Amino acid sequence: MSTYGLSVLGADLKSLAQTAQAADAAGFAAVWASEFYSRSGSISMAAMANSTQNCRIGSSILYGVGRSPLVLATEARDLDELSNGRLVLGIGNGTKRMMSDWHGVPDTSAPALRMEELVMLLRRIWNLHEGPIHHEGRFYRMNLTPTGDVGPPSRPIPIVTAGVRPRMCEAAGR
Image (tube, rainbow, N blue to C red; front, side, top):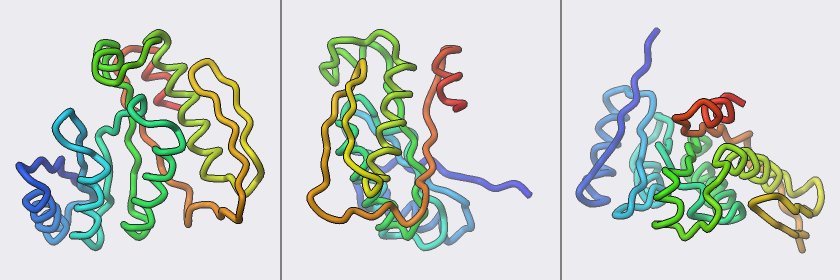
């Protein structure tokens, strides 16, 4: 059986939410929000989560380089909770020029390694109940010791990554 998803674009958040609601009512399996310089993918997904009941809510894509791993992990956890476990987290780096010019990333080399390190940190942050994080990586440094009980998300949050060149596609396949 085939399933269908819909990339939802809207001039404003209200029309975006209405389109997502109509897609959900029509039986679409997923609705997908995009992120660009004029629209936040996280806010779009929150609007779609609030207006739908059954379909998955996904990002195609959120800029991984535009957020710290902690901010991205907490946004995803909150969106998964808001959607009652329907989130699919799609992340990407964008082009090297977008990384440097839009997000101020000084080192645009090795985007696949950057993505692999980010995904590893996201999963580790979601499992903070296992203990503190002390990470010294090529692209990210994190020392995080929880001061209270932090349980894992209600389910493992699925992650999909965007890739174009062979090495990035290899990273996406992991």
